[in-house]
Length: 308
Image (cartoon, rainbow, N blue to C red; front, side, top):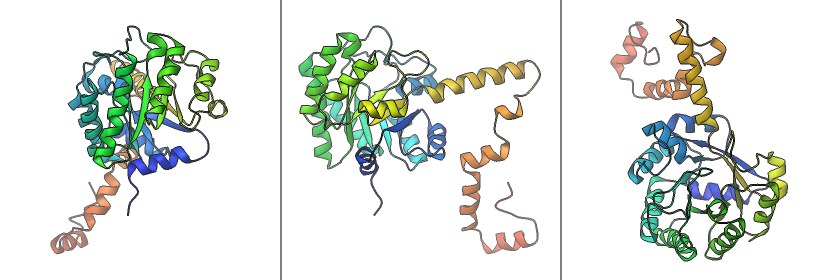
């Protein structure tokens, strides 16, 4: 029997070392993450909102759009995927529905935050969080939804109170989330190595996640060894794939506008592209269903299911 996505993720969390997870935003980026040899990856609400809508991550993308994008990502790969569940799209009852749908979609885990609605993007201005008791009830609701569904989806409890209120408040909330059964803890926008260390010292039996926003975020970008030494178990790189894609497209458009095509070393060959998106796999599977007429045509050189 195949290992469930959640069980695979729990195995990763239980294994030694710190585990790095890029954030994908569509099926193609998820396939590239898997081909690069990563054991799991995250979805990025920031990047999905940008790629799907061309809009900022300020709660303009809907619950349905996020879940639809997630299903496409999950179907494209075999590695476990952790969902960006935002603030659960409302109160505790909304959180329960969000978790149930994440389970049905096949997510291995989901992280849920304590921001108000409409939410703001991490590491940006204007973040506000709900009161303590409501924040804790959201995580309790998520855990209840998991139990009621008979699932083992991993619940990552995120607090944005470091930036909204204080570092001390974020520690209190993280401990409270651990007390109600969160599987992984995340404080967004930790501002120093010292804060990262103090965070890892609370609830020592619960794995900690680092959110390493590239290109100017508030949290120091530490090496994997440094993260492991501090006590982190998983680390997300939320913008790398989206950011380099933007720059690559800008450069390609500049070249085309100047009457050229992008340089050969800046893009894969057509054969590589076909392999990445699955043409070769498709051709091999297609051969299994070739008819007798197809086989005769192939012998005569008039048909070849792999020659497209």
